[in-house]
Amino acid sequence: MSIEPDLGTGLEGLITLPRHSVRVLHPFNDTQTVIDLIKLGVSRREAEQTVRRGSGRTLRFDGVSPTLAQAIVGEFGRTGGAATAGPSAYRGHGAADDALDLILLGTVMQFETLATSLAARGGGLESTVRQALASTMWGAGVFRMGPHAIDLGRRVGVMGILNVTPDSFFDGGRYFDPDRAVERGLAMVQEGADIIDVGGDSANGEAPAIDAAEEIRRVGPVVKALARQVAVPVAVDTHRAETAAAVLDLGATLINDITGLGDPDMASVIGRGDAGVCVMHILGVPKSFPPNWHYRTVLGDIIRFLEARTDQAVSAGVGRDRICVDPGIEFGKLIGQDLEIFRRIPELHLLGFPILIAASRKTMIGNVLGLPSKESLEGTAAVNAFSIARGAHIIRVHDVQFMVRIARMSEALVGLTIDGTPMERCRSDGKIVDVEETLG
Image (cartoon, rainbow, N blue to C red; front, side, top):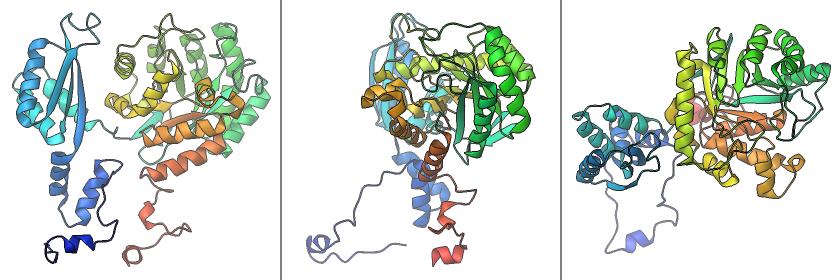
């Protein structure tokens, strides 16, 4: 329907408009814009086409040959998009010595026109561009761990940290006794944890090195007891294949590997069953600072690492729906690099796996705030809420009850559901109303 405004003569009619009648919309994602257009009476197909024509994107191409770079810049320029080329950060590291990096800015429609042009060249670049366009948000689905599953399209997963070590950086020694550890694990489930993550080897750089036998001695009894008593998956934080094999036999259904399958036998151990795995990025080795902090591009290097290691897992028989990824906050990163990762979490969606963020009580937060770990609860809450807003699907936390509440509120803010009921049908007191009452 077309409405002709009565503007009077000149600009007088416009001057009488209420102050906030015209505003710029900043939707959380393109889906919200489509919904807004449909509510104006536009068909879904037309709404989606309008968004594609008008939505801006920034695409980066790493390590492109000069010839191909020239063709891309030329083709994209003809669509009206903007392209910039420069020496590749990956020269000599998986790219030719004369390779270029490109940054392209344009609308979705301009990029789709580019993809169509690239199809004639072959080599799969067309599908690469289309995949990048589609990856602004991972199509969240079900994450499986043995007989357990979490629908990450409907809720944010909360992983509770249970350290059975005498020297963890935050709760060192509190749950070293197996009975106390099991008691705490049961309490975490009552507080709303979706996963219990048992760790027997502290990543604290000041903690002494232990072997697999000692790690199994610490975590084995706790895993066995919890697996029998809780209805949620029990994970084990280990980078040793020997430990992983032992705890999977005891009932663990998820291996959280801070070395990203650094043990050559780890992928095959997990692949023999139906357990899940969290593949984390690390620069260097556990308990040590890396020899240097150099990244060619922070997200680019992390994505390359995770892509290679998740491919390794899939090749070993681990189903893609049993894999999540972790960018590895603080593991070989400077504080500025950690903060960049938080801001650029959406870039990790390109991998097509759920994203786990493990930043709870870390010294990075304390350094930003100038506070010790024991006073970093609020900072951790801010990090987790921001990470969920940027697209994280699972958060790993010490303070389970507090962070479950953060997760539930954050997932509501980003457009998920409350107890399976669309929020637009909930009154402020929680009562569900029918459509007629909602529209009335």
